[in-house]
Length: 228
Image 1 (cartoon, one colour):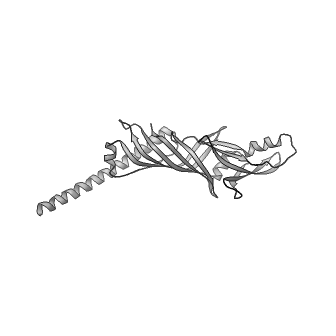
Image 2 (spheres, one colour):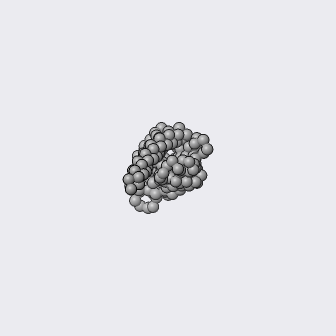
Image 3 (cartoon, one colour):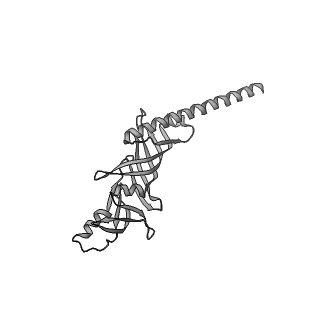
């Protein structure tokens, strides 16, 4: 009985040490992955990386992780025309993450997630004098207000996803005006396409939904390049 107790104590101690070592290894791996993602994607902020599953060390031996969650706040992307658009929040869940033989890169079999863009950031990306706000009159619509040639204008625009990487705002109708080519001039202010660069390779914008706080976008992907 005494030998059995000693054996159990040793097992518990070794188990505790293994858990501690496993958690330390996870922390180090998360930190290194965050730095790698930051450099490979050209981010200005360090993302939050959380590696799921236990034990971690056995996953490393098999070179495949069950799930890796990545969160990026304040992602600024090139929106074209010399402008940028700020993505307030980007959260992604990457599943079945395969690690390369030398641990220099990783890719996920599939990924899901969400992104959020505030109306303040979208207004800034739209250009000077233009305000983008929530429009409760319909599904996935925003209200755009501004001025043109001394006239105040208001348009109601539909928000859609184009080519898996671009958010499009398109006015359903244009307020009347007698100035030649008035509609074209107004649409230069109200209609816009803002490309979201900086997403991990293999991820794309899937669906969009407007809310009182901003635009929520679901993202999805296959064979997503996490690093490298």
